[in-house]
Image (cartoon, rainbow, N blue to C red):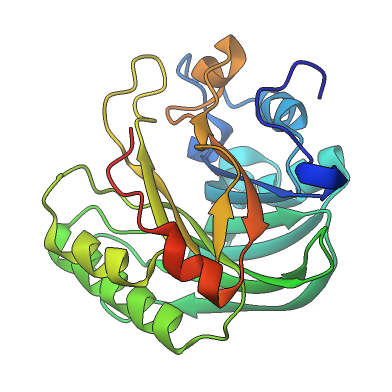
Length: 260
């Protein structure tokens, strides 16, 4: 993108992987209008390789469209749905959109349910650098007790998982600076970014986060604050350009928690 402060290539033209995490609030803007094209325009401008979405609506009576599939078609990407709240009409939850080759993808539902079913999408993609990357998309519970259990499950998955460059894209629904479970995430993360994304018109709460393992952000991730993004959803997107690192380099990166 011309004038984009997040460079798409690194030294010697090495291709980075651009990712975005975005709670689209069922494509309902702060004006209460459901407008998929607004969200698509925000995402087109970001021009990411991988998009992790939360609160995507797939129940026709509510949205008249499968929003994840519709966004994928408008962006020329592949869609992997991960609805957690499912009824006779369809589903509501997470989705992964990508223009990269998919190696494998799985959906996991958290066992502990508080206010509504929660879970994650766990995918392996072939990155722009030719490596396999692991991408996890999630949306955690509003209740702290369930949220902590979900984070512990995620930590276990990261510890036991393959030694691949890994990024977790999620709405963690966690705003407390001293949340105990977040400390456990620090133990498995090379970088952990929390950025103020909510509410979109005056962001003060760091609900949306990126967890990086065996990879790092080329520059500090940024919150996408365009006028259209402030209107299109009640959350703002978080964008980063990532590069894989070797295990030795990973040990030297250090955790970047608490960035806002």
